[in-house]
Image (cartoon, rainbow over all chains, first blue to last red; front, side, top):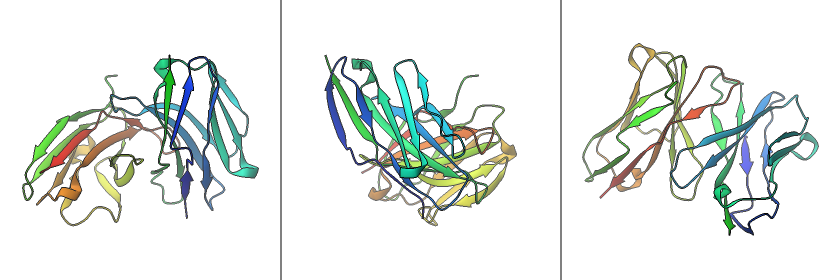
Length: 116
Length: 113
């Protein structure tokens, strides 16, 4: 069965602190894709990153970085020097190609509050 | 590229009424998805179209729900005889590749009173 777990329901940090959002996934497929999305108060899901199961390289994009570890089935997201504009709900998602649908299985999200 | 659009953005209806939502995907995207998101939860998959063919439906999609994508362009999601439990945000997403990311619309927030 496919499952995505985001154990952190809500995190509060003070501006400029670093913060890591955890994501643990379960799948029986050897080929799968992992994603992170941001959902600001406006409600629209904004794509941040995609990672396939064969690419374990970590990635950095500005203040954002992602750590993908197949050994622990984790795909964690770190924001460095957080800003108030980072306040949002962040979702981790998994998709598999077995059925050809590539539908997403989402975690329950982590609400990040960055305080000025 | 104007992104995925959805209409209406908000809908308030009385229990038992029918409602229809529309999604316009990014023009070159052949894959279209509907998801439902309730408060405090992640979106849950409802149904998937590749071009005009509806290829997968979730068990969440009861007989009261129907979706179409005529001519492989825009899509509609209809809920008949709405119930209070249908209150949620209905999200549409599109992509041009199964392996690629999905782009989401702003959603339609349905409130059933």
